Amino acid sequence: MTDLSSNIILVIAVTSIATYFSRSLGVLFSERIDENSKIFRLFDCIAYSTLAALISKVVVFPAGDLVEASNLIRLIVVLVCVGVFFIAKRNLVYPTVLSAILLTTLIKFV
Amino acid sequence: MINSGYFLLGFKSVRSADSPAIALGCSFLAIGALLKNIGFNFQQSFFSTFFTYALPGQLVMAESFLIGASLINIFIGVWLVNARLFPMAVSMFPLLKSHNQPKWKYYLSCHFLAVSSWLIMKKDYRTIDEDYRIDFWIGIGTATWSIAIFSTVLGFVVSDYLSKDMMIGLAIVNPVYFFCMLLGSMKNIVIATSVILGTILGPVFYLVSPEWCILYGGVTAGVIAFLVGEFND
Image (cartoon, rainbow over all chains, first blue to last red; front, side, top):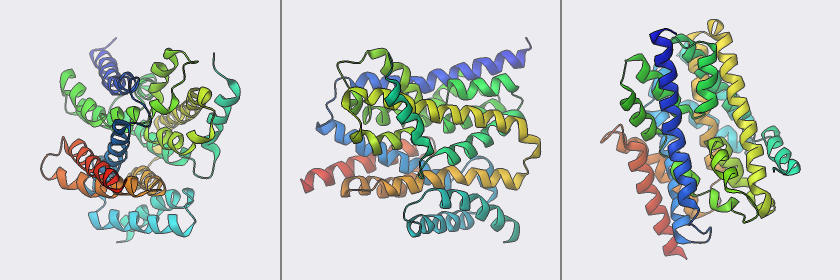
């Protein structure tokens, strides 16, 4: 096995352990929590807001391929797709498919 | 062991109109192509999603690997970006509790915890018998996890045919899908406040601390939303 291969296996193992750590810790902690308690409601709010923070961070300050699209183009795509989501009576397929087509088109022609 | 009826009901939930299959597929397709481009082989790409199954964490792993970061740095980076999974688990697993179910199901199935499966479960859990919610959850998780693994493999295989523009187009699908799904889940003032404040504070805290912005923004927004709920009760 080459050094690079064994390195990749170690990197995958470390990534998997770091990810499972948060998931299993959450299960362990939740064993003592009642779904009608205040602490449950607090964590519910934090879970929703953390997801929203993650998604908006990805759109406003992206990493990877999205950097290639300007902030304005990314925001236009998100706003148009949100509009389509509500016009299409909360159907998720239309805005999802449209987002990729719209972004690719805008990058090419704007 | 696992009630097949509830398992299949959960498994089939990815076929609904609001299924995350397309968004998940596009995102992991891009991950598969990315892993091939940075030097992972077929098996390594497969096992990356098989064992990790967390998109932001896998992106951090790929970026860290590219710059030659140490294992401890990769661990901390991945743990930080995946820390959101902790409150997600705490806000979901109490809903699945049943004294008639063994604990191993909970610790094994927590591997399926991701934004897509979490949002489906939070939307549908009330319609499922309390004793079998964990089996329903395992069904949802198996379906979303399988889509992710299949798409990673597909992305690896077709990576040579994906242009830069197509990769950029695929990258926006995930945030748009999950943002719409979050907007759709705003059924009361507390969740609406959580989502709106989280959306604003995530990028705001990025200006202060890029590494911790998701946690700072999420926790601050969540605590304010919780207090809004308490004040309204």
